[in-house]
Image (cartoon, rainbow, N blue to C red):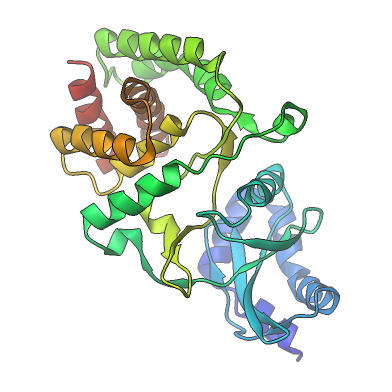
Length: 305
C-alpha cells in the first residue's frame, strides 16, 4: 500500500458520512478516487506528505506537506462553485490577514496553502484580545473590479432575496418574531440598499468568527476558510456577535468596539447585524438548532426595542 492509499484510508468515518450526506454518490466517488488525486497533486506540485492523517472541516480535507523543506497545507474538496469563490477570494486578499494561497486547481478542488498553527484560535483567548484582532481583520476588504465581481455572490442581493421570505418563514416557525421586528428588519435593509448603490465593490468574509482565526508561526492572527462575498465591511460583524455571546448589552458594546477598531459606520453595522440575525434565526430554526435561535430572538428584541 502506498503512502497515498494510507492517507486516503485515514479519512475519518465522520467526515465520510458528512460528505456523502451533502454530495451523495458524487461524494462517494470522490472519496474512492482520493488516493490517485493525492498522488497526482504531489507529483505535479513537488510535494511530500508529512502527516498521513488529515485534518478536516465540514467538506474539505487538509494534509500537511512539504515543498523543498517548507511546510504547507494541501487542501482538497469536491470541486464546486463555493471552492472556486473561496480560492479566488484568497488570491484577492493575498495573504493580508488571511491564509496565504500558494497554488490552486479549481477543476480538481485542490489548494496549496500556508501551514498554520491550529493549536490556538481566537475562541481560546480573552474576549478583549479576540475583539482587537478581529477588528483589525474587518478593515481588510480588497476592492473588486466590476469585471470580476460575478465570481462572487452579493451580500445585499442575498439579503433582499431572503427578506422576501421573512413573513412566511416567521409564520411557518410559529411567529418567533413580532411584526414590529420584521418591519424593523425591512427598514434596516432599505437603508442598506440605498447605501450600497454608492459604495465601491469590496470583498468581505461572510463567516468571520473566532474559531476560524488561528496563528501563523510568527504569532500573527490569520483567518482561514473564508466565505467571500461582495459587501460592506459592516456586513461581516454579525458572526463575531453571535459567537461568545454574553447578552444584548455586551453585543451592542462589542459592535461599537469593532467599529472603532476597523473604522466602520456604526449605524450601518447595526442595520447589517439586525438583517443578518433575522436571516440566521430562520436558518437555525430550519436546521433544528436550539440555543442559537434563542440568542437571535433576544438580540433582535433588543435591537428593535
